[in-house]
Length: 373
Image (tube, rainbow, N blue to C red):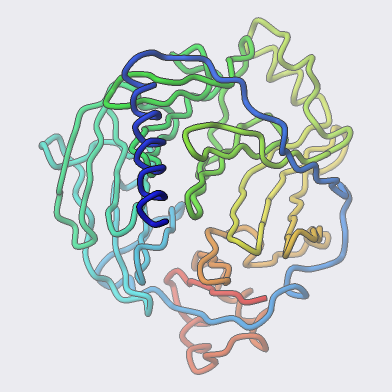
């Protein structure tokens, strides 16, 4: 049986790669297994602290490497990887917050990146997609182990387990579709056609989230989560947002500025973040009422049951925005120094390692919160 399984995997891999070599095709996105999620779009007084269980907190020691204000945060083996796009710096820290090394440097040399589009962690390798048209691979210790020019980078890219490069171009990319896949630089698949002239949104967050053998995609104006797996894209989750779902009229404009003006004068919503593991899902949806203040809606799912909560009026829940990833059944958050006091006040009773509370309260550094449920 193991030999049969291996042969099946090799045949499937060969078919995927062969399709990329022979031709490029337009794929219809599968909707057969989409899960429809009704959303309770209203403000509630239920706070995230009520859903959170025990918390371990780690103060990041920035004495040797300062982190900026808008940081990407990823697991790298048992360590932490921080990506500071604004300052063009990628840093590795230990799980107890100590600086270990930088990953590459900014520059125009063969092993340097000039502008970070996005970063992917694959096993213990850090893949940096950089403008202009460059892909670099680094070991966890920061050594450059490969570099390649590539003209098919968009807003965000990744490599799947079969070696296909998947690129999301957004709504104003050079490609005729929002998603394209490439094998060895040759296009082998396109899907999600462009919808006339609307502006692509850069919310400053990660568009792809990887778990197991799948990657989950946020697509700006669409209230759905797409899943890339086994060389194909499918609609995975569809959130029913009622009147806050963006209307089809938005896509009928021929001028991106007119479409943006139409959107801002309407009730609308944008999915800002989606992360998951085998048992948990978390989605952050920004709700924009036409005649009221905007607010953020959080959906938390455990074993398929969804709970919805918002922040009370005027409240500041320090962990409700900085969600980053699930690992080993825990939710990891990255808190900026400005949230330290609020974190100490709101979550002191739930923090296991209470001996570092004074360090948290008086620290000017970032804090990693590991939350159990």
